[in-house]
Amino acid sequence: MTALSKSSGGPFVLPSHEDAEFAKTTGRLFARHLTKKNELKVTIAEEPNSTVVLPAAIMRLLMDILSSMAKGDAIALIPMHAEMTTQQGADFLNVSRPYLIGLLEEGTIPYRKVGTHRRVLFEDLVKYKEEIDSARSASLDALTVETQKLGLDF
Image 1 (cartoon, rainbow, N blue to C red):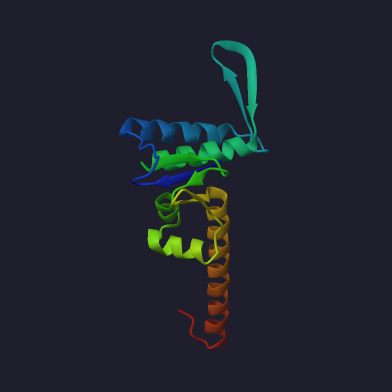
Image 2: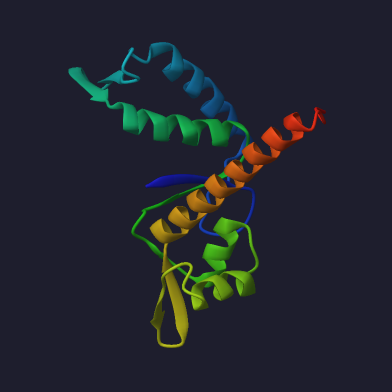
């Protein structure tokens, strides 16, 4: 699963002011007690002799959720294998729906049709976003090198 933060729309949970304050306090508390492996040992109040170790992967996700909630951002958890509508996919990529449909139709991102409606896997959208972000970063790196070669440092 991936934690998403977004200020409006979609299957998101918007935290109240009290939730945001609780998330701030809890996030700080958890951060102070993480082990060197970024795990957290938790004792269940109802069962004082029962300790659970939350692994690093769970703690990263939990800390991301708490951080976003502390800022007042809405949160959604979406399984990587979930199917999304084209509007949900466009919202995730922060592009227009027609632009996403163009990407789907040209084969850039795989999809399937359910009747007349297109469905796209969330993991395919994430993969596309990672590829685009990587290409964008490489272009910026190349531009920086060229700028330095020309002595145009800003």
